[in-house]
Image (cartoon, rainbow, N blue to C red; front, side, top):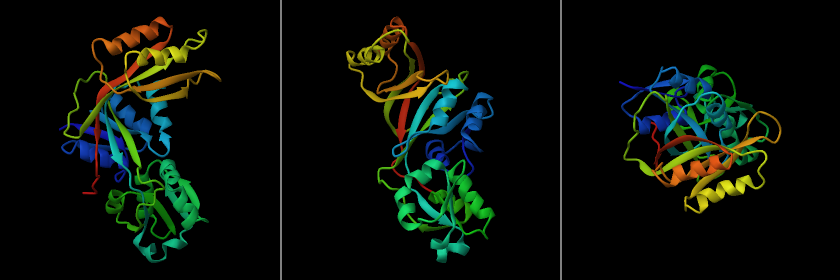
Length: 289
């Protein structure tokens, strides 16, 4: 049976995405995003699922930067998952949860619940963990501490915690995109009834001596009527002012249009790397079961 790696421990949103997408696979949690990506590179697991972007907080830069600078892993799929953040406490503190002194969670989860924390728990200290599941696990192991965690229903069930406030995220349309990564030596097409669209993702670097290069890059997509769903800049880490661009095109790789874009951009002196051409899946409701 194949194994899929994910950002753990148990009880993370990443695990919820994996359970919905790969119900028959074995699951291997990793404590950090880089370790999860290293796991698929080293063939410890067949696939890796890591968060890439949240609708409220934007891109998960650690995933994007590690994918660009450290591990050349093709993106073979995407999973969009609704995010429902709850306030969790150990059952011994459930009746007096407003007296908690600290709230643990992943930085993105805390940021997604800023208004709730400011209005309901204005005096608590905020402390960060590698994942929402890790925060919930810490609560289980430290029942005497007056501490809460932000996490999901799966984490509450996994670690025997009480949900004292539900849906504490600031915006209702809270979703996270997870990418499915595969070792370049593998050739497995990801299929599911959850398919909603298809996409190709580029990493593009601009020539330093070409005025208006970004406009020319966008024009290469525009005149071919290729729709872009995202364009984002990230530092090259080679000096101030040096950036690469990540561009999502709402189409799978074909034989004419996208190869034509690549050749046109190369003719402009741009660096072009296709990070993946893949199916996109969406989960309407995640389950703790």
